[in-house]
Length: 479
Image 1 (cartoon, helix red, strand yellow):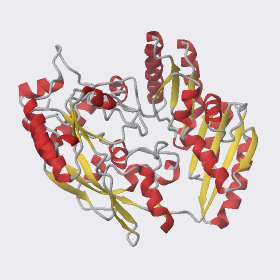
Image 2 (cartoon, rainbow, N blue to C red; image 1 turned 45 degrees about the vertical axis):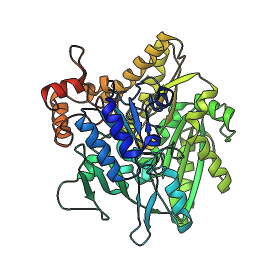
Image 3 (cartoon, rainbow, N blue to C red; image 1 turned 90 degrees about the vertical axis):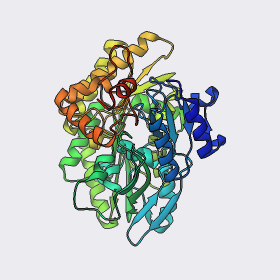
Image 4 (cartoon, rainbow, N blue to C red; image 1 turned 45 degrees about the horizontal axis):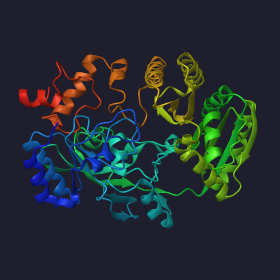
């Protein structure tokens, strides 16, 4: 939609011209996030510095019937930070301050533009860290983590973002500023913090976040188990959990990803392995040696051909760097890739991985895997040529088939990336029309005009060529 020149003028008056972006050559940067198959140009991008400025921007957009949404670092993988129906992107990168660290209460208060890893780097010298650690933690923002309820390799033991958020300052779609939660775990009444975390930016815009800090463990051990078959590696995952051991992290990486990592980084992953498990345990030092022996025994009983421990912090860091930079390394082996993040019960891991490879063969494309295996959170990565229309279509079909299979196996459409625009067509596999209508009623309570981040999560779709925003304005409310 073409943006109203009067609105642009008012935004200039509020923020100054330097914090309002309207030129095409600058807007193109914001047309997609980490998922490149879905693109949409915003009409304007604004960069607020305060909660009050966010409130005023929202009020201006509402007055002018203009859709708007918040955006962090743009590292998301479901299209959640894309202006699906044009309008104004509220870019939060200037709101990037760690406002408070309180070690007595083990909390921090941050603005949404704070980079995830920066909080850990700030707290680490004092013996603390921020536990949620998405693979993009060097670049992703904590506001984006809140919107998508991001996870990461250490989710297995420490939980997802929702388990570490205590309070939020939120600017509602009306422009009102509200405080949710606070500094303690439990508040009387409805868990509105829980409602907002993972709502994909469709209920309000977060401007301050109170998070829990986690003490650094006394000891850490990191292992690399090597397998000749991906089936043996995936079977090992359930066996370790069945033994009563809960590792801090347990990541599965297949050969295609290993080849990409080693061509890019030389992390020490065995290039002839069909799959590896990167396993980490932490806690009291006196307990770790016995746990390590038990894990090694289980891995070898499941046909691991090698089991080794990182002997130094440098070795451990290199292994984790290989894992965290794996997605970027794929540029060495493919011109483009498409990924999703379905979830299955961990006992079904061998079955879903076998299915993924077979469906890839059916459509003539390779499917690589890098999984938060302990959580059953798979990340099938479909390699394709972006200049080949058939391969693009096949990549999407493969992804949809994998997600459908996840649901059939008792799983879910997403573990941390969100629905966004990417999985709109698949939502009906998991939720009935009645389920979706109930969730839409909740969104209407917070976002009655539908102007905040439209076109996300629910596949209600446009009718007769009308956009949902036009329907909303014409009918006087969200439908």
